[in-house]
Image 1 (spheres, rainbow, N blue to C red):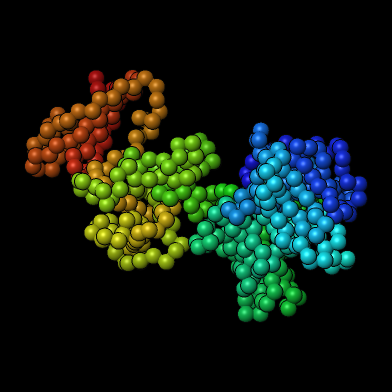
Image 2 (image 1 turned 90 degrees about the vertical axis):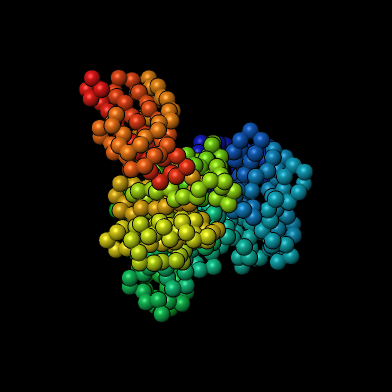
Length: 477
């Protein structure tokens, strides 16, 4: 479901609302009239068009407070969008169809000629197409990204949002998956034996408890609790898979979160796109996406979650290929990777010398686990002070580190780039000794206000030797 739906104000359901639950064949809803809806008997749920921008509309089932719980989706699992000429039709042949202003079909229920005689939206929010008393199709059986109380999720159904999906497996495990390939979150049953589970069902209870049950064993297990589950069953609740890859519970008919599968958003695989690094600012709990170094640039500067790309690809590198070192950084390794038991130095060197490896992660020198990523693996990075791992990324040298926080802080600062020739010991800076021999360094000197002087040196053409010095105002006197 399009994230824009979450940001919309409550719909104004004030006119032309169907008074009964039954929707007769031949009925239509028009995008040009967003106040026209089909309602449930208790008026707790409504089906109608919502405008997401000045020229685009989506059809969705929403609660009385305007929270969408189901929408038609296209092949990319995004909300199916139409223009102001869009129409949602319940045809006499039993088909539900969404068309745009040109008459082209955008979505269909594929229920034509199946004997459908009626459509209805019931008090649980379920849109049902029935042949007499038999349900041929329902929105609960074809979920998008949301689960509500009274709605079962079985092994044949999947919640989807962009590249992310949430599934109940046949063994009773529930999983979050990226791009149909990487399972980055999994929760299993502690009381239901996987060997005895035949038809597991997941259900969000009205009191905010997520329950796993199995018909064959007649047993159930609570697998998640909303933090306000003891409030009672009168609270409007729903569970949604967000476009950010996290599964959350909400209550009160609003977007007030009461539970999340992953407390740490940076642990969602691919959250910052390929080559993107997820981290947090000290002053904020919201994750930020950044590129590994200045050797990279954002794929889309307006959407940092789309990841990064090398400014110069390794295969096009005219200079030296080297490894960018990222301390306290982990490249997630949910997929099968080449795992070797070597130290951090060898973890870097082995990847550098390999033509197929382009990234590696050393968990720590104590356990000597090294994960090697080979082309064309996706790189999802997480950087934080609690991580003991060091990661390496192959780049065209020299390495260009990210600016320091001092340099990024802005304000009154002046910087110069100098080229300094040093032989033996650099005597002018007593805190640093250079290796023997003659090296050319790129030097960056910054004065930030009256706070001090920062000097950065990088060996030209190598990228393997970088030093930074910060001299305070008192030291400069």
